[in-house]
Image (cartoon, rainbow, N blue to C red; front, side, top):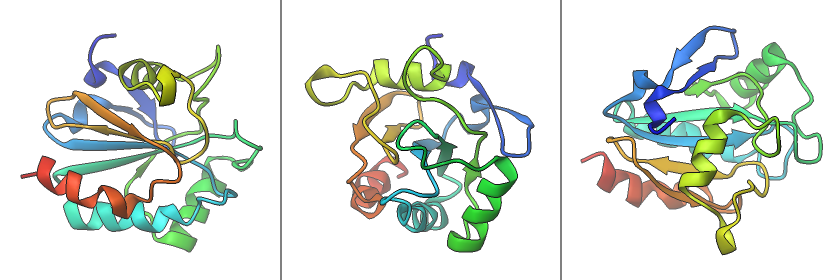
Length: 159
């Protein structure tokens, strides 16, 4: 696929959602986990969602590939995010982000925005991909980059 809008992902509730739904919006795609040292970033992601929606779509993709830090099923993940962080942004069903079983969305994102030294692999939970309102993947942010650090860049993109 040559366009981010051609992909579809399943929500935590099991409904297919076409990423075409986000055409014209800036997107921040994040692989998440409920039992990670970076899990508190859900609060920062929610703050970005509240500040910039509907011009920004924060899209969370739970992943259990790093230290088995997302062991729950969809209902457990959704309940955790809501109860602990008041997450209102779109969360999707659990995916793999690396390897043969990697979700096609993450294969696309990692090709479009390689990591350090050109690595395609996602390093850890809470890796972030910023996509402009025309669907161009702009850059990848490492897990240790807090969502708040992206605020100025996002503000420029949503103008």
